[in-house]
Length: 158
Image: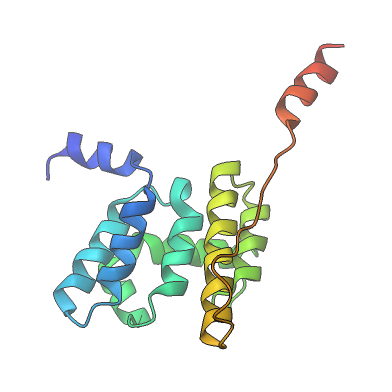
């Protein structure tokens, strides 16, 4: 890969489709799929995709830490930095609470936070269905955001 393409890739934000494709690759029984998925993660802009990447790590149940360290070292280094800085706890298990707390401390944008809540609502739906609540069709968390930026700008100009 040439430098220009690498830089463009580093700027890429994960779409929902790519997010699910990576999860499917990491949960595949094929080791090559896992390695390709981790290589893609390693080439992304980790900071701008951190919530999606934490969720991918949470959902990649067939991947051990050694594979992450070998094929996505940039991501692991970033997680280690978050742990050293006290932003991410040292627990081996990523929970929604941990990811939400990390999002708050990193001042994740509205889009990232909404993605987290959408993922959580999908998780809740799947848990309910797995428990036999087959009358549930969908669970959605409605998110309405305040316009802090505008109100902050107005108060500073006065």
